[in-house]
Length: 280
Image (cartoon, rainbow, N blue to C red; front, side, top):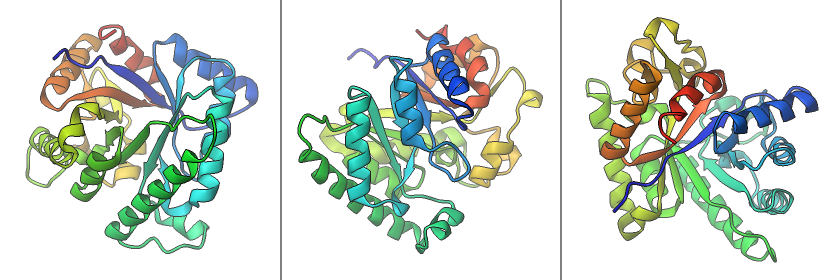
């Protein structure tokens, strides 16, 4: 079977003015990316209005990367998803996660709960949202992206997701080789998916890109993951080398793990665009 072709996304963090946002959306498309993504964290851009605004000036696929299912209502989520699908001509990828930032739960007055409780809430939210969207005439169900690193979350993705994105922590088990850990989690997803595994697109979150380790700013991903720098630099999602070397590494990842959808954080938008040139 031929290898699935690569797709590339970039996660933009803040909107700025209308003019600035539209210009950045055009830049994303001009640089060869396929998907414009917006994360869901307080203090950053509100995903849905930002994606609708980007749709007006690009032909890009538009993704939430990813919504915190622990703080949303299925009724409101289904309403928003349906209208975003209408306003973007069906270009939405709906990314959902279990949530991991305590302050976001505190802000809406909800208990964060254990990891298992958050995953159960995500599963219920997805099922209810799908049911509500099925009743929306003329609205295609968007592809569902799930994100995580732990085995329970990966297994849920295998059962339910159209796209699964491995977070930076997916390559981390203390004392183990990150590539081996990542490969094992990919097998967890494969086993949970069963016959539907070939239909699932595997996404790798790239947290940093650079020619040398000294040139990498790991502040953002260190804060988000809690992983120390000496471990981060060994993770599959931290890419060091020339654009050609990084492209070859991603081709090896495709063979080893099945990852063909690559997402990068906004600070590395231009640097990773040089890698894309070798893979398209």
